[in-house]
Length: 242
Ligand code: F6R
Image 1 (tube, rainbow, N blue to C red):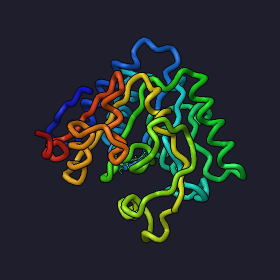
Image 2 (spheres, rainbow, N blue to C red):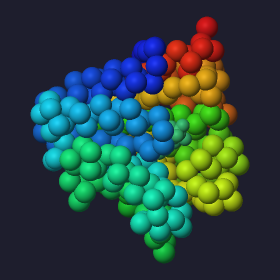
Image 3 (tube, rainbow, N blue to C red):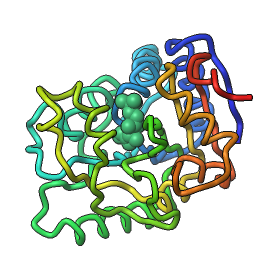
């Protein structure tokens, strides 16, 4: 695990974008893994500037989002399909037909999740998986005590996560109870896991992930076993590291 400590969230975005550009260099058809939430926004903004400047072209890249809420209409501004379109696909000039988000509206959610996971596996896992971390240590929506070998599936969101995400909705009651998320096993199949975090609210989760025992209590700690995990964080998120 490589840990890079930056001054602030903007620098996290710049450093992560530099890494991303270098990891993707030379790949004919890169396969990206995309997180939503606040953490990767600076990274996506930086990448968009590089696309605009002609430094990188993602028009032929494939991408798979990490997760989606169950039961939220696609056109809802906070469905992850909408968020990914707004914050990634459009600014990075990606082909919407090549970017997938788990189906949180399928009649058979389990079958749709299996198919999603199989599509990622068929490509040999994603090349660069962008990750954030929840204040309770989740990655994707793999909440504490998720199985380390889990694949894409339906999960129940913990109250802490619903409260953390209430800022995107009118109230915590509107935050869905369930989601579909790539599993920890799916994430571990990625070639590079690039996690970004900023702010003091992430300091406990970052300390547990980087310096704690590998434990299902802090799902992100599984990244200690990832052959190429790069953790790019600001000073506030790093403040509880020894
Ligand atoms: C989102 C996701 C989550 C977030 C995490 C942190 O697709 O998979 O694991 O990365 O909840 O969210 P923010 O970045 O909003 O603090």
